[in-house]
Each structure stands twice: as structure tokens, then as C-alpha cells.
Image (tube, rainbow, N blue to C red):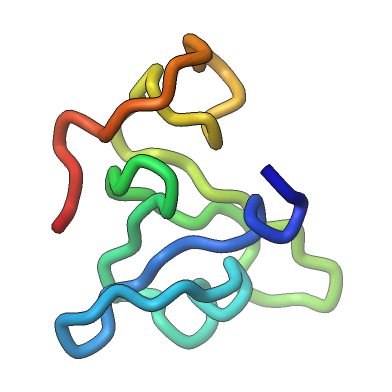
Length: 86
């Protein structure tokens, strides 16, 4: 996993999933549904929504130990989220 991948999520725009940066998701799509590009589980963007030095991160709404992008609890075997968004 590259650092660039860690700073992206997928946003549902007009019925299609589009990969966007966490900054773009938080600023331009705050109310749109977001999912993890690795396991397709629903995520939320954490961090301040204003200010010049914002550090954003992505958090799964429901924990899943099969997602390589989830630092805590990853078992080492990737698998789809049990409540994956299609």
C-alpha cells in the first residue's frame, strides 16, 4: 500500500464510485456516501473541516479485521467488508 492510497477514499457521485482524496471528500462531498477502496466498507472522514493545517484520516463506520487499510485489528488476510457497499 502506498502513502497516496492511504489518503484516498471512494465517493458515490451520481451513482458511480469515484476515487478522491480525503481532502476533496471532506470539502466537496461532505454529505455523500464514502467507502474504503480496499474492502468497500462505509467510512467517515475524520479531521477538522476548516483551517490551513488539516490532517484528515479515514475511519470505518463498522470495524472489519479483513481490511489492510485498518491499522488496528487487521488479521493479515484481506477480505471484503461484511456490509460492503456496492
